[in-house]
Image 1 (spheres, rainbow, N blue to C red):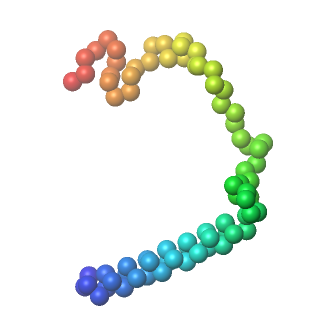
Image 2: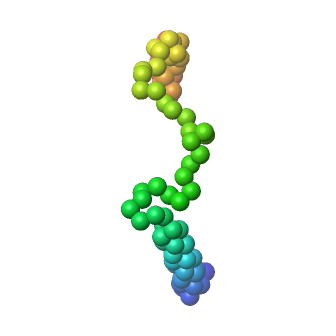
Image 3: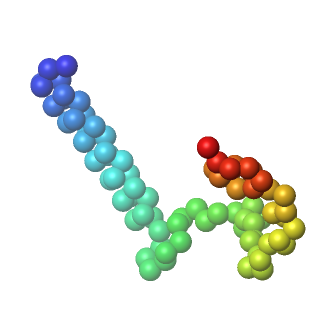
Length: 76
């Protein structure tokens, strides 16, 4: 590619980026003033609650450490 072709491609990409930023600014402007939540809030029925309690240690019994190989063998 020539320098002119590269500059044209950069200019086109910058124009597209500018359009996308303006679109995001318009979407953000639709939010209620002072609200930090987006206009389209996630559906609470699809949200999963992750408990703070530690996992049961037996879940990890007899597993290999990923990337380190099996416990009873040496890594190469």
